[in-house]
Image 1 (cartoon, helix red, strand yellow):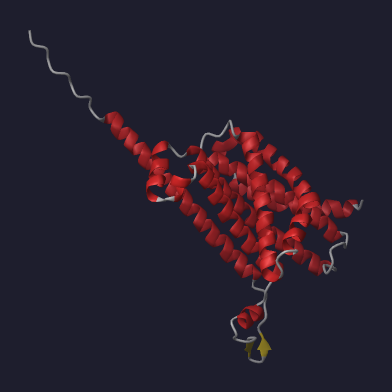
Image 2 (cartoon, rainbow, N blue to C red; image 1 turned 90 degrees about the horizontal axis):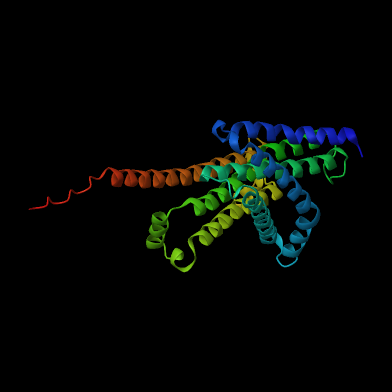
Length: 296
């Protein structure tokens, strides 16, 4: 074992996890610290099982049936389903009896994203620093791969886990009135149980995000690739071809739009909670009608 490569891999994997933990941490969740760390650790174990036993067979099975870009997209969708369900299973296994709000579920979902990505990054960085990754040779390409994983892949996992965690948490804490309202407005809740449908929606949306992001990351397109796809040819400005990578811009837009989508969901949930709270308070303040006086 190359201990210097291992030390570098662990260091570069831990730094972004530490900063994201600081960003996501909330002081009023200190009571859940044990479960946060436990979920992160179990997600590392799941990352080990996924990378060693699941990832390649799933990829080969899907891409053996579908060729080209659609095969790559569907293989990432399949991998996303396995990953999100695996992380969600850890959340349910460790904290199901201790959740008090939707925020608790999302916190634990973020913990699994951090733990899972920490192991995956450490495993891949170790191979990179040992020179075992084809096409990634020399310090410049190694650094590019590390930066890409830190700034692109970890936020994508956090976003997907947050989306799945929201829908699962909403399924757990939605009251009877909210469920009845969903059944009145949307036909699908009349056909399928509310909790089952919410988990399905979380799975579908989070894995679509996952599949789109990692498919584009796989192709790593340039501006020239994009303009050619639009039949505009390669861009040339003042005799200089403009063929920069678009992944940094796409990653920023992807994470920004995904975050807006997630915050919108949270805002809708908070509005529903506030509305129910106001209705309950109004009922509690409603004066009790007095009984008529008895006549002798």
